[in-house]
Image 1: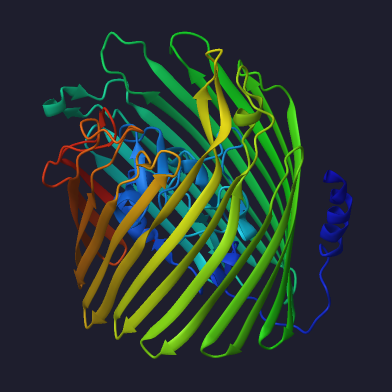
Image 2: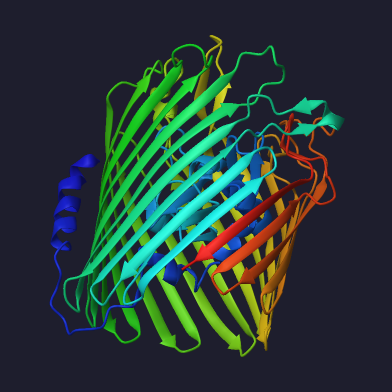
Length: 609
């Protein structure tokens, strides 16, 4: 199977060089993830800008919980956090940093609270499968962590300070400079919290729950000429989490993680031809201390070398041919896990045809072949479209086959790793209904998904836990979202509300999956007049099972949580903010036995100059 890789490598090199074409001016704002622009035409995508992120600046979990359809399972505030997207698992959600999949090679998922929040210019949440473009784990949806570089904008700086309950500090500095040919942006962020909140009704104190995080990002762009531009984006993150204990006499634990990412991009843009060549290096390192007073009990370091080329040719004005080739070398070494000097080659070739037969119709078809060393990787496909049926209504559709291949832990962990595992396979379809009337937008998207070869760790006859391909899962439901935005005079109003229905069952047992609420509702509203702005947030989660037998007594009860805030702008450059989280003092959990904070407060100051 892997003998096809030399052919793939030749293809990659072939399209790594710019092709001559007529000149075309490069856009003022550069977006690293160019494929996301096309995805918005055919799949539901929500974009959260910096102003949205700062409404929940504590961590990424809070942003996704209150401003997206994703369910967040969090083991205490700021602790281990995992997403559930359309009834799927955390390993079936891909986190994409500037167009590069950054899920852990060990766990196959992203730990949300260790992905940093304030080091990005915006987040985009895309529902539905995307493995043809974004690879393994892009089954339930993808969460995009985006940086942008602008040209000809001069010098801009911003500083943010926040202090909140439980001795929580959160700061960032952003500084950028650009002229017609050069763009540089620096972001530094530091967060820490004693995180010692109490929930007396549950007899719970978040003991040993402190954390601190450091992040540094640097972006650089240079226009070689009107057709060629060079970009570089880097990201350095260090986190320290002390996991909560249930008693002051319990052994204290902690988790340290360091991540480094570097991305080089060479962009060529002509009248008919566009070519984007990327080289990326990703490194993840973690250490777990079962007793913080003793040496580490486990750990690992993973390295990922990536070369990716995105070639697009406009055959005619209405037809685009897109060839995406990628090659990766994944390396890993564990500590006390049996994972020793593992190396795996992986590659892929994807072809997409985009056709716009008229102003009211857009069609896209994609096919992809994965080549993963020692794994029988599947052939993937997608077929999507957007049809404008009326001035106020458009219909989108998407059908795709997606996958997730086994992680290093699944394959090589000792004892228990299973080298015979097959990739998880998903077939899914959705039908999006988009309505637009004046300043209102409504999106209604029913979907269906079937997943086979689900990987589960189960006990064997010898008493050892081992992963096997066992479950078949069926998930269907509805995602809906209503948006309104309007400005008049010195007034500005914005409302966004979503309702999600999810029916996700294990077909073998006919029981609902754990930690997948059947109903979720979220809403955000803001109103600004001149220098003042108020905002409200609300989030409802229905009954959520925490065991595979659908035990009502063990399930998380439904809850509604609301936040509110006030922002005041002075002298154009200074903005003072005050927030109340959990206004109604709701007692709630997203993970069994780990309540989240009751009513708490924070103040912040944002300076732009």
